[in-house]
Length: 208
Image (cartoon, rainbow, N blue to C red; front, side):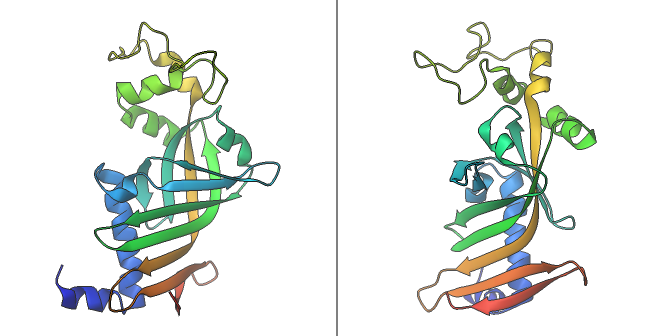
């Protein structure tokens, strides 16, 4: 991208918002993108912050939605109640852009979206949800939690059938986007808030 094009984007709220969604969309489809694995933060039931790296699976700009896959037995699922607060953080060094997103979270283990996400997962991906006991459980020795018969090998479709019961999707409805561009000549920072009444993003510049 030319410097002129960069200057145009990074001094225009509409284009900066578009860049945010473009980078996220690429992150969901390109496993080599730095935004393919952002940090996702929730708040535990006792009020403590809890973060983890997750794989961004899909982005829907028009629904303002990000999707991650998860095991429904893990702690973050218990952290998320009805429309709980959630934050997503990623940095793209090539674009020199940091994105901080916040919004509402929901976990679905059944329904069309969860079923479609399960079907899209590879057999190796589906195998992860066969871990027993659940992820985060104590172990007496290092281990994956998988049956040795399927550890390190490609499972069959029949072998992963029981894993579907443990699979869920984490949906993030984005309400705020903070975009930060780092540049030697001068940083740029903007905040975008979803205006539900007018069904549009309201943007404003911030001091970086």
